[in-house]
Length: 263
Ligand SMILES: C[S@@+](CC[C@H](N)C(=O)[O-])C[C@H]1O[C@@H](n2cnc3c(N)ncnc32)[C@H](O)[C@@H]1O
Image: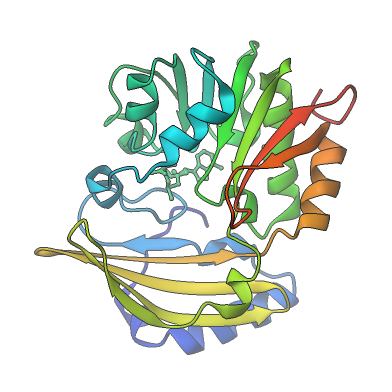
């Protein structure tokens, strides 16, 4: 069901949609991730991201944070690179980058980096990098099998003396996120239209992005990655937490350890 775009009738009744999703998920009749969808002009990725929206966005300090954490000239495998929002400034900071995404429309926007169109969970490039970077909250995906497959890919592509950079939602965010609207300095408005909790620990959001004449909607599920779970999942995959890179503890640097499922 991934890649199905939002229908207008569902948008008018998000509460009913959530109830139906919760019932079907609890009955095991529907993969959780089928709620992830998007709508709006241009291409939409399988997980519901609008390509044109992400192509307009600019980085906000992420490349510098990553650069400082991985070191000068480190080779980078960027998983879920999108339209290159972070790829391009990282490239300009001197990194050789392989950008991976399952959306060819996203990758078509990337310049000056090798691109690989593939699902992260299936990736096997047969080479290793100084740094594997997986940001944009992909680690918060509420599907344990998929999340673990992501981490195995990270482990099998990082050098033994390299590092993994992850971005999760900051601790507490899932418990406190509420419908709200804010205007971004970049010139768009983001409106969290609905926040539902279809099952314990999972948050379902529908967010509208309004930018000039264009508007997009993104519905997605997310689940908090606590310190304890992160530590345990990383250990299973063959990593240990090295340090948090920001005061919110959203950004994590992990180091490979011998063994682990992805080693
Ligand atoms: C929210 S966008 C962020 C893009 C970019 N990291 C940024 O910060 O602008 C998430 C990206 O991850 C990609 N993605 C999500 N799940 C994926 C998967 N399983 N395999 C490959 N790409 C995936 C989507 O196609 C999308 O381009």
